[in-house]
Image (cartoon, rainbow, N blue to C red):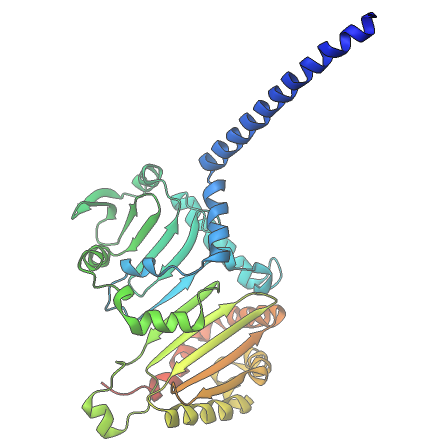
Amino acid sequence: MSTESASKPARAAGAPKKRGKAKYIVLLALVFAVVLAQQTGLLGFGLAHLRAATFPKDESLLEYVHGSAPGVVIVDPHQLDLKALGAEGGAVRQHIERTRDDIKKATGIDLGFDVDKLVLSPSLVVARGRFDERKLAARLAEHSYVQAEYKGVKYLLRAGEDAIAVRDGSILLYGAEPDLRASIDAEEADASLASRDEVTSRLAHIGWDRPLLGVALLAESKPSLRAILTGATGPRAVTVGVSTKGGLSATVAIDAASAEAAEELRKLLEEKRANVDALTALVGPEPGAALAEVAKRATFAVDPAAARLTVQVDVRPEELDRLAKAGQAAAGSLGEMYKNVRLLQLLAPGP
């Protein structure tokens, strides 16, 4: 037998060992990548991004908001397309980046990476994400925050100003100390917004698959005897959902006291959008003209069975940027503009 023939079995026997060694190297590299991703937060971010795309609904965050809250706004950064908010360097994008940078400098928390979902109520902010309690405490110690505790929940407090708590590394609560304690009480007593069907059902109607979702309760779902006798026709609630896929698109659902009231509100809004002078008087000449263009494309639909008026509004990125810039230019008159925004307040039933 030749030397060449004898070496073939040896090479054949060595080949599986090399392939086996290569598999171990690939496996070790994969494990290292997973560990690195976990340590840097990339793994949690990736899983959260996938969850936002497949299962965006997260009512459990409402369990931290006291049931007496008149409404909430829910923000999902994973579903937000910044291109729909205008050009890079535009007024809206600059404001978002500035806010993100300010919070990161003070707390080390990156709103675009560490936060998966935000719930904003008038008195409390609730966030789901990845938070390091020790690092947060070290940073805020420089700003005179001290450790405090309530019912076994530890939090950081700056007396007379605000408080912040991290729970299980995944939930962050921020607000005044009494409001943070009320949140702990509400969760313990099952007295949160999550237990109010008039909130959860309205959010579900618009849909959680949006980067911005909000509901405002303007009146009790069941009118009082006085409201019935006086014929109060104001809205009961307003629910808003904003999408940024292919531009900014907002769906506004206004629940009225009756189908007739919803139809009257539709007629009123139709009249208002046709009156360019009224829009100009409301927000000023330049933003008024931009707002008139947006109002022309708005659609109105009444669902008599639900006594609900649905308004669909689409805003192009360049229009949003124009409105934002005009708003900045007219910053001195924002207080007066706010006073003029009375439409829903005038329609709402009295106490």
